[in-house]
Image (cartoon, rainbow, N blue to C red; front, top):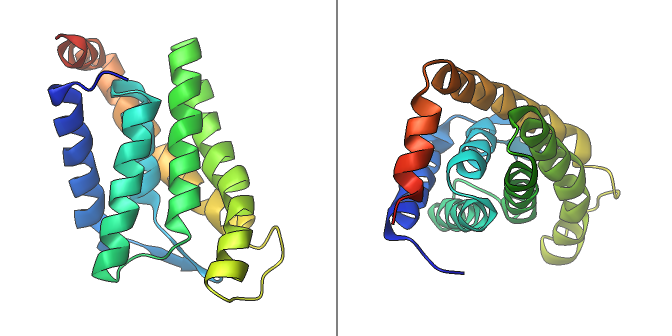
Length: 169
């Protein structure tokens, strides 16, 4: 994978935004739901692609964990969601499937993948589907936020411009 300085800087800025907004979280059950990360996942998918989205999600989760504002559950949830919506946007170029992929990737697949992290690494008792509903609720909120933002950018034709700027060498 060839790294672009422009895309790397954009992914880093989006990770910084996500970390800075980490105070905005919603506790649901045993997890800390964090809708800003889901919004950033969709924005990364649309502007940067799956690789940069996963890097941004990883950096956000790592920094939040180091700062004590996140949990280990952020790693499988956010990274899988970023990968799924990035890949689907790359394949289809359409926004609605991308939003759906973020919700399924983070909410369902990421929620299930949190089971081994919670039980084996964190020592918590949990069922396989314990984190699916809280993650799904969080990703639904963040995906709606992203849909509003990206939709406004699309209607103003700024989406095409920004995608062109980021794709230039």
